[in-house]
Length: 469
Image (tube, rainbow, N blue to C red; front, side, top):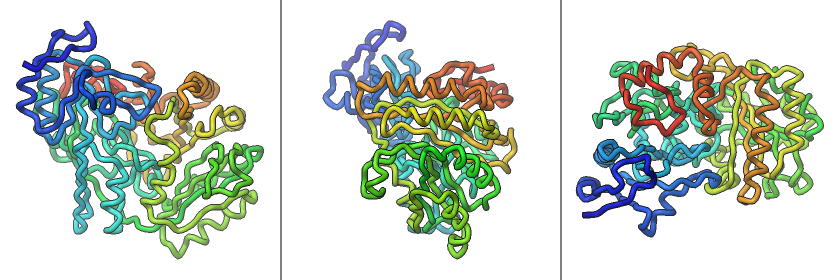
């Protein structure tokens, strides 16, 4: 008999018999005494250190079902990891069962239907690689090492939001393993209430083993950063707010307060300077690019206008090296309807105090196509926002963990009373139930009813948790 001690007295029984589980899965099992355990349990956010009692690295859907059944019957708290990019470390659990989908990362493109089938453990870089050869892309985020599952279930803000909407606005269906072990398909035609909830409601309702997306025509884009001195940030941010609201849908750009990294992509004289800027992505007609970017290049004038034609996957991967797995990271977020003078002044003040080179503040546009989806058409509840902000403290050195955490919390506290109240779930740490309710606003009650139907015992609780009604 193969046994493993559970990690906490909260879970029962104290000793788990893994004999049957070993026989029923094709993937790998890792216990704390196994050599690969520490590598297998490592999280994207190096600030968070969790020790599951058991990790099941699933090879297929059958493994997922077997692992989930084992966890439920053994009384273990269950966590699910897709790409593992969650800032709050909600892809793992102390003393419980971690169901790891990382080996389930297949991507299949149907170029005639322009659909993309993606398994639940895939990263966006793999999707970008598979779709680009067909002149397609699935709207996602801005980092290609992000997991498809977490970003999608949280909503999906990124470069293509204004043109094609959120990632969830391009989701056609999902295969889901429910808490009782059944595999179902959720779409507009089947299990439509579950499909509604998955689009923004996170991992509360089941384990998504595959997604079917609508691919969108995207090939070469015009993109890159435009930077201005930090002492011009207030003027630039006021201009950006008005400009992006009225820009054509094909143009997007997120505003950033940043410290310029010392690398060949930037002039030496800008290295390690705190600056403000916009990272652009234009996916409209290429012949109009010069016309679209003319007022951007003229404003300021900028210290750097690094815009060029680039394959979309290259733009998606541009920041991967900076934000690597294992760094110390702390996130907070807010939604803003508009940025008034007080909010802009506070943002500029907080930017002056960014504690490390990688720490940053981003503002993502929620305009264009994302605004044309109804407020209650999906669980994602801030369609009326203009911007989603993230305050992001980052550093590779654990000695700086307190410093970046304090700066992030203080920045959030300085800005929150100017915001709409909630936050994009993918920009949240583990911040408590009231914060979750505020994030889903009027959609929370409906989400609670769906939770009661599909997961009445809250098997899927390691997330931005929705309680059943």
